[in-house]
Image (cartoon, rainbow, N blue to C red; front, side, top):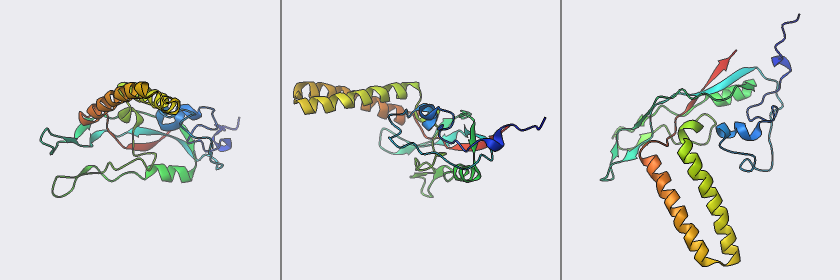
Length: 193
């Protein structure tokens, strides 16, 4: 018995190309194959270990008071866990560099630490898209397709009806963000056995 776990022969697979779960792995399953684009990128490097992203939680983001001022940041317990991924050294390094620590500028008016979306570890999909937000996003995407169809066909009364519904969805998404139910928590890459 050699004791080989198969890791040495496994290729780096941060986005699910090797295991056939491409759409399920992108942004925690939020992006499907259609949202991923037509070119499927993959890493050719051998895996150096098995890792997963874990939501760190804490106080992140900001919200506005009724008078337009900022109030205390939202609290998230964190702990959300992503799928296990075999990663090469390069991807471990890239995914380990995270956003700056959350907080406020010296004047306590501007939140910092969550200007994100440029790195894989700057946003926990479970925090950014809880169940209600995912459902609303699916409806908004469907309505956007309807809007395009009605515009092409010149059905302006239907276009106005769908636009009004789209505005309701947008308002509810804004409310979810303002109340802190939708927020951005960074992720921490941890090695698993």
